[in-house]
Length: 342
Image (cartoon, rainbow, N blue to C red; front, side):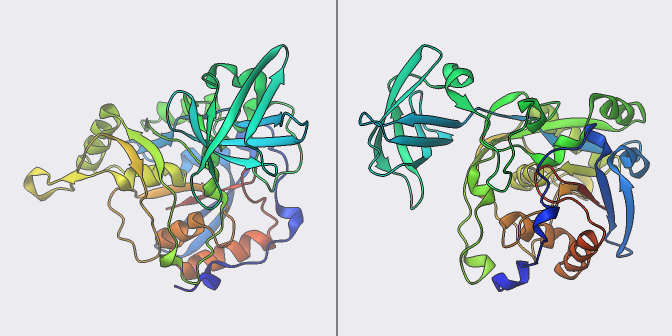
């Protein structure tokens, strides 16, 4: 698949710079794969498309204050973006600043230092802090908004889902940003269960595919976990004929990374709990094993996330859907509107 098949032209004014209020007032483009049709709704209409016995699976990761602003001993400014924890004091990170080997961070009376000790890959470095950085991120760090958002948000909690629990992400699982506690209560009251997985999102999520073919791209690995309670809920739902509805591409990636064992009487394979790194790369032609429906935002061109949506919808339907969303002035990317793909 040539990378040009994941291209589209987006008017810059459709890149959402701030979230709508309340969260579930965002628009929802409902896409039916069977009939190849669309409905224009709002996110608070989501329960109309759910059925008792369905299972929503959401990512409960929490964004950390991963952006650090420091300086070299000579005074030059250095910016560090934490990507992945390697041990208690060592992180993989992006480092902005020429020849930044020794970095000093200070704010509100707290000071600590870090050394850039190795290159991790073509874009990231290994950074060793003088002490564990996590306890001090509230003082020394900032919320790491995506590069296409140019405005600071007044309330950092708006870049967290209402169910964010497990700290570790450098970016939010944005499909979940549309849920409110009240909407979740409505969904559960109608007999739809909610379960959680964890996937810590890295900034490589926003990195475009640079290879000429989509399949040649090497996807980043991200830490994830599918707990026993969620595996049990998935297996029960599938056995009873309910649908597994992934909230976001991150949840879908965890679900499709789960190993299966044959079920008795020829039923669907049983999902197994697991934790560890996944580098599951889902591109058009992929045979989906767990996910029946998907809630997602609109994604960047030439991205692995758009390739995943193409695998779920079919690229022709994706192209028509994105063209429709642009004509109808939907808001795109992290703070934008949502799609429900049935």
